[in-house]
Length: 120
Image (cartoon, rainbow, N blue to C red; front, side):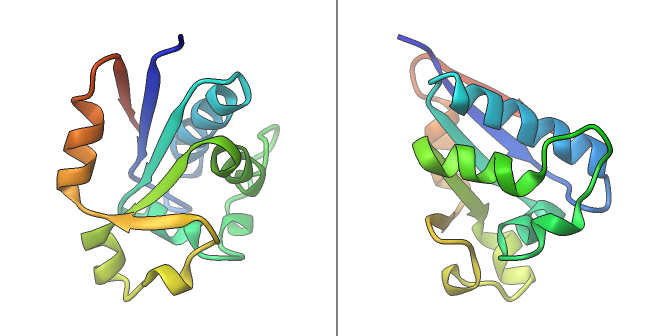
C-alpha cells in the first residue's frame, strides 16, 4: 500500500511557480493512486474559490483547476481555518468538496503512520 501524502501549499498567484509545484506533486500523486490530502494556506486559500485558480497561469504547467479536480476526485482539499477567516471565506465560498479545518486536524494528519508531508 502506498503511503499517504499530505501537501501544504502556502502561496498562490503571489508565487505561481512554487504554488504550481505543490499542486503538480499533489495531482500527480492522486493520479497515481496515492492517498492525498492537499492543504491550502495563506494566499493559496484563494485558489479554492471558484474561478480563482484560472488566475494562476504558468507556461508549460498543467492548469491548477485540473490538478485540484484530480485531488478532489480521490483525496481531500482543505483550506486553513485561520487563513479562511482572515479572507472572510466560508465553505459556501469554496469549490464543492473543499473543507475548512484548523491546525489540530493538520497535525493529526501529518503525524499519522506512514504519512509523508511536503510543504511548498
